[in-house]
Length: 130
Ligand code: AMP
Image (cartoon, rainbow, N blue to C red; front, side, top):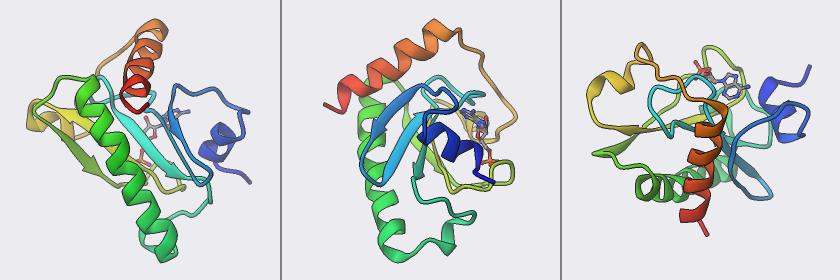
């Protein structure tokens, strides 16, 4: 069965899109640790990061870097944290989290955003990636 993230790529489930290439997709995490928390995924559905073929792995890292550079311009923060977990969704995803304190990397602290705030945040990041 297709993962929830494959359904997002295919447009069957909505997302707040941040960036897209032929092989990768970035969108806002729906339950963010901090405003701007973004997920970068390969379109190829693979469960575990280190099972990716090298080309896709390298491509995902480069794509994540590009998104992170835009993210830090769009969202004021001390730095952008990066994490790969995958215990909830079995489709490789890189978490990019604008950080101001360590708690934002623990996945215990969450912020809630309105649909309008999600859309404005995604638009602000997209604008930095042009
Ligand atoms: P993990 O697999 O533990 O890295 O966590 C999966 C992440 O995906 C969590 O941070 C969720 O909030 C996020 N997530 C799950 N479903 C969606 C969705 N439909 N849109 C955006 N983010 C999602």
